[in-house]
Image (cartoon, rainbow, N blue to C red; front, side, top):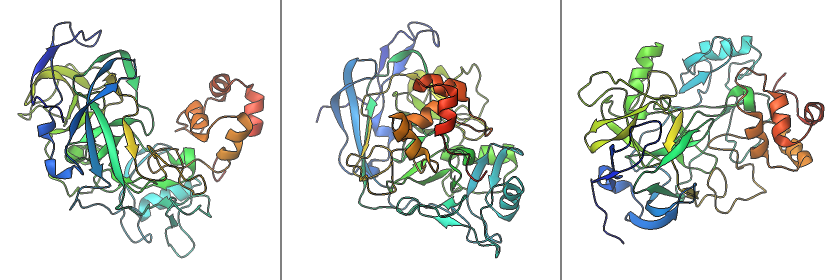
Length: 386
């Protein structure tokens, strides 16, 4: 294993987002909780997505840190409280998943409970939902290991990369992977419920965040949501590292003062506990993560030993688990539509974008897929439950 320098600085050309000559700190592996690693971290040769040959930290973790409290996710009945969900349709905002929220969705045409008030839940890793709208609650697989690559020295991209839905964001200091916003109900018909720390279990059986979990109370205060995360909250603390190698912090500076001069990715260059460097901050809105990354990620930077889900190295095509993203699943009929188009379901979903308003841009999607809008409309299934 190559010797790893804890904190040192290099001079990088930062493009349009920071001025040339700014010192940007190396990724500091000692900042991680060392107990989360399934094997000692090592520095390996890697290739960035822009073709740059460089060195990366190779981090191998288990399906979930030992002792981490997760849940609740789906409530059992309308009288119970589950986790949280960021509803993006009419009356859109962050909600606690409870009877009031589910009745509101029912009024909009999304019924997640039966006539007796039992919430329709399913483990979509192994079982296809038999209803139009189900709350997703996946069972963990304690045998899964996750391998991640983080550049040792960050490299600025020519332009920021939008993270979109279930994009790879980074890794928390407790070893938990971080992904951007989960698939919307309008997209899949179902709700992959998040717990009160903003995380859930992927169809591959491993836990991950869709939020800056150590500063999620800031979001709850801003959105007037009654919920508590089991993790200690600190708006000035470092949460983790993005997959481009830049650190991620809470919504304030270390001394609790407001951050200023943030760019479109919610980052800026300034002093931190690990040195003068470009870094990201969380926001008051959910998901409180950077919407884009300014640096370049490594190729093949996320692999798991799972047979399904994002990063699966040996996917089992016979199982319901698929490559649609963390805790997501392709909408009913999308697999068949993708086959007719000669593409994967994941590519079809990417071409459709995130139809948060229930009306995807079919003209753009058709152009991206090389078909006419009329042809695409004939091939696509109807929106879930409508």
